[in-house]
Image 1 (cartoon, one colour):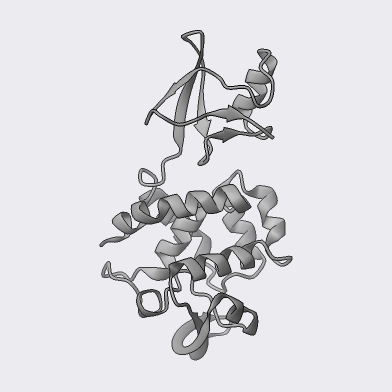
Image 2 (tube, rainbow, N blue to C red):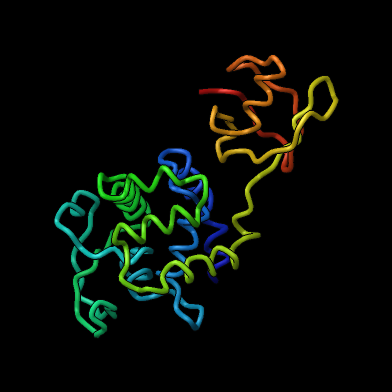
Length: 213
């Protein structure tokens, strides 16, 4: 399985993460691709054996998510040198993702969520809050966002009223428009109340689009 196949397979989980916590799936997928995939296209040992797809270093609080410390070599940029450090190894991807969500919604990183509507700007804030010492970290994340652009393409829908197209817009992963979505404001302006179904078509079809808080 290559990085694109892996991302496609795990995208529903990353979309669900975005719905729960507002951590952008486009950022999470790019970060995991950068942290977990080697230049030769294979998974890193930490990701393959420890289910750690974000290079999380071990901390005692992570034991609540099944994490155990594993000593591995890593490159630090401040100062620049090769060191041995303890990383977190998880029993499976589900435990890792719970820990990842807990870290990025913690008091330390939560302020970055104010910029979550722009995944690259969100990544900038996460990096500035101390995620990595690599001065090229953000360009590397941006590069993966470009490479995975088609894989992590947001869904769009054409919303119609009485069979007449009204607007096309990006649809959140759970199919529920919220007050922060521009399409929501337009439909409210057209006289539709919160919680009322809109008649619509989309690619792929079959989603239940609703207005909601």
